[in-house]
Image (cartoon, rainbow, N blue to C red; front, side, top):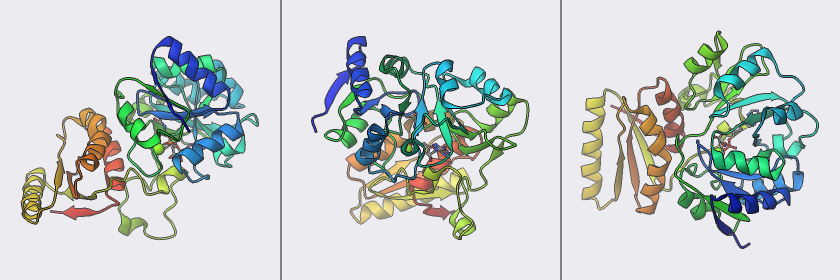
Length: 334
Ligand code: TXA
Ligand code: MG
């Protein structure tokens, strides 16, 4: 398949919107990561998204909207809590899991009776959705299992030849995917942490929010039948670089010293080593750079990535969620 490389001009967004409306696939920028979009109400088009990414078909898509009216079409009931979150966080990096209307085909939701909906905070994404005239189903625009794409080049590397078009724009502002919050239970529950934190959500709702208890759990605690994350996508091997990756946990000084020793030893053996150390005080910068660093390590042919764990608070918790998965929970305590 020939992939059109488009710019983020109004004319080219219009061209992309026509492709979506015609059942085609277009990768586009959002403020979190790039998404791979298709008409969310067209089951054949959505089926092609799974095929292009090599994504398991039980892993549901997030449906992206550009107006509050779209929301009414997709879900039967907008509760007071949903309204509060929409007001505070949309457009923005928050996906709500809600009951779905029959207009949404089964393929889009992986057969679930709920649907994830998000209004992205990016002018190109909003214009694309509005011009396509349909909600857009869009997982992250990477090959399944690879780090999420935070720059147009990442999308080109993964998806040229597999999709109809790619809209190239700036690097994504946040760099990790949206916070996913399940609004279908008695108490809202975070299924995937992001830039919008538990504290942010609790402040907006004026009440407690739960965290899916499997989040950031280490293998010894979940290596059994009970480990069933509620977001189907959270159970797969994820965000994995080609290089082996080790996460060093402990006091920061000890961690930095241990990483240095490991680096020197491995370099002496002729290995290419990539070191990732983010400042605990710069969580947003860590989120912004994390996936890009993994891809850079692969491009440079790294044999191993040595990464320092972040404190699991606020956005640090969300970055650690990705870091642990990328490393396949390969943790070295120091
Ligand atoms: O920031 C984002 O959310 C990006 C951009 C493109 O918007 N999209 C994204 O999509 O990260 P994806 O498909 O890579 O991740 C969606 C996550 C998966 O873990 C999926 O299992 C979960 O959301 N999810 C989607 N619908 C769900 C549902 N109805 N119930 C539970 N989890 C759901
Ligand atoms: Mg993804």
